[in-house]
Length: 149
Image 1 (cartoon, helix red, strand yellow):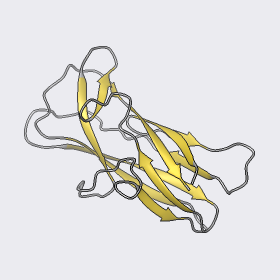
Image 2: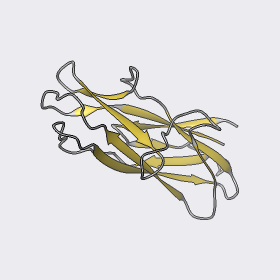
Image 3: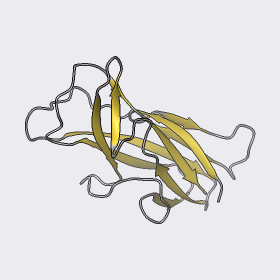
């Protein structure tokens, strides 16, 4: 299995393809995950979602993994655009946000087999309740999507 990668930004923006190759390759397109204005005061988590669309040749088995991001330190973090401040967040493969999405095949990636139509995978994000307030700013992270097929 040969890995192919897509870049996802902050949470998720990505395009991947192998120009000039047949559909023995896979194409990954991700939508941005936008948490919007975060309420870091109180006991409620801040949730968001995005999608990853996977297009491979019919019958191609694949695994989609998400790395820890560019600002990882014990957890995924979004970095302030102008200050040395971070907001922690997690990514999940289920809407209950119980199954963390990582990059270890057989453990925490999402596996599938391509059909005739592209497969749309949902990515669920959460900034945990009780996150320490940070300065008002735009916060960003870069996640790499790896598709192994």
